[in-house]
Image (tube, rainbow, N blue to C red; front, side, top):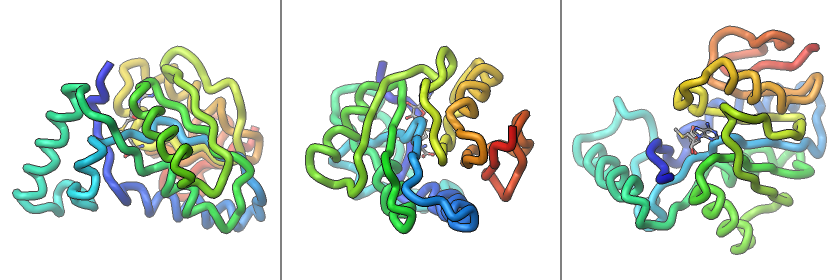
Length: 196
Ligand SMILES: C[S@@+](CC[C@H](N)C(=O)[O-])C[C@H]1O[C@@H](n2cnc3c(N)ncnc32)[C@H](O)[C@@H]1O
């Protein structure tokens, strides 16, 4: 399957920073972090992709995004992924014990492995291929990042159940939903703590 949905550099910085702030308040150290659905873009075009929200970009930048999208959907090009590195960077003050990255697209996971092989991470990284609509990651983490993935699923209830199942008791999940899932309480926009 070819990656149809997109991502770009810095897309989730605010959500990640907010999650870090709550993790610091909770005095987390060496957290295990899960990133589900990091996304990817055509590797050689990554540097040209605009930052920020769609509404704020120029027509020229929009064209670049369209071209990248067409190339990505062809499945012919290697992908780059940015979110796992951004997570490793933003959460570095907590000295994460491990970063686990899950996605259903092999090319996205290959992009993570490329970064690992190039020594880009300051934290041990594991990857695994899963479809979150069918299974949970099967492990629990102190911090789960699951941004812009639920909206891409058709079986939303099952996907949400599997996403939140990866959060440890008293751990945090950063996910684009408004209401707290059962067993969680909302700490701030898109950040929830598991309380049961
Ligand atoms: C729109 S991208 C989001 C990328 C990044 N998290 C962001 O916010 O920019 C959606 C990501 O979720 C993955 N994904 C979509 N449906 C999935 C599923 N059912 N199981 C696992 N991964 C899925 C896609 O392959 C892609 O990497």
